[in-house]
Length: 495
Image 1: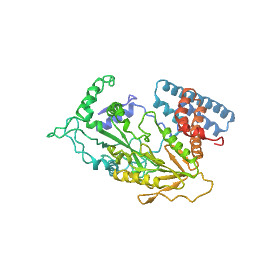
Image 2: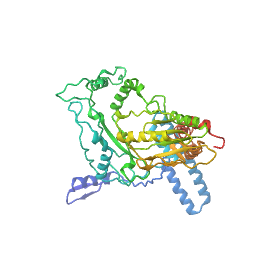
Image 3: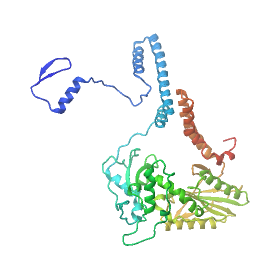
Image 4: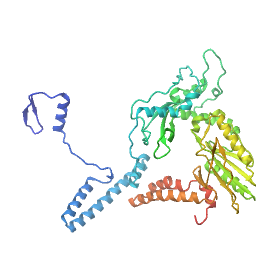
């Protein structure tokens, strides 16, 4: 067998090569190869010309020629400025093209932001344990499956996760690409075949063509789902992403499950919400500050401060605030049981989703009503499968008496005495027992300085105009102005 090389030479090969080796042999002889060394700290604006100048700089330094070294350094600085300017113009073009992902990637590169180091993934057994842990409450309360063409019966047991790369080790932090697919059980309105039940209440609601004007067939699908009172199984399937609560999680409870549901299901939920909100608004707890339009974190903090400061103006008054912490609140509580309404004076329970706080306005040390409200709430949580984490539940005591009194007796929940703290972070705002905003201001200054450093790095790079304003509004201003309506009017010049 004869072969011809790219140089035109002919040689004799005694034995033919296998197909794979022959192809590799031909590629190696026809396609030129070049070895390129890349480093993790190489910046995208470092071009081959700049790398060549760096080599010239090292050669001039070794040779000891100072004049040549200065000349190469000047040219190197000019080329680096040119490369940075080209990279900046590239980001500005991406911003004009609404390529926000590319813009933020460039901003992180300029500011020196480092992605978390990849951690080794765990085994299949740990992924299955995490699946069971996230779905441990749904398995106990899952309704019987309904037989219908729209809704297939959900599996009573979780399927095992195949592959060792689907989840990290319990001692390592998972990457953003870790996905665990779990069935998301919801109630079905489908009656058994031998029974004839009245149509569900949701069947009287229909989506209008204007609501689904973008895609016409969605209106038919949504109306059919509402009419039958059933939801396709695929719409109810969520992709659970375990997000670590701590920098170095060591147990299953150190991860927060974030469910990524179907976009079609989110669209249907939004349409149904607009229909249900007027019907249930009269039954909403007035001290539930979440899930309501035009009401947010600021309203919850201001209400707590207003009631506390108003009571502290009276002689012999004390304010005790119990901040509850729950274990897996959204997995354990059943929505039909959320009927605990408490509007008592001088004590009340205010809520923001699962962040609940009992505010006790105590006069002359009489805290019986305060303790009674806490006990009633703890009993209600126990009856309705809502687990209070007594170890993380904290109490804040505000007392402006000039004379120091002995601290009040601690409140016990489930046999555990609740710790009294000097400061507590409530809904992102730091409150202390003096209500002087010193702890909140110190936290904002620390956070603002670290983010302003990134802003200065961008400014020194030459970034200006819309890019700099976008980074400031989303990274810096969002941190230092959080809850400003709560603390800005009471802050002193010293702060």
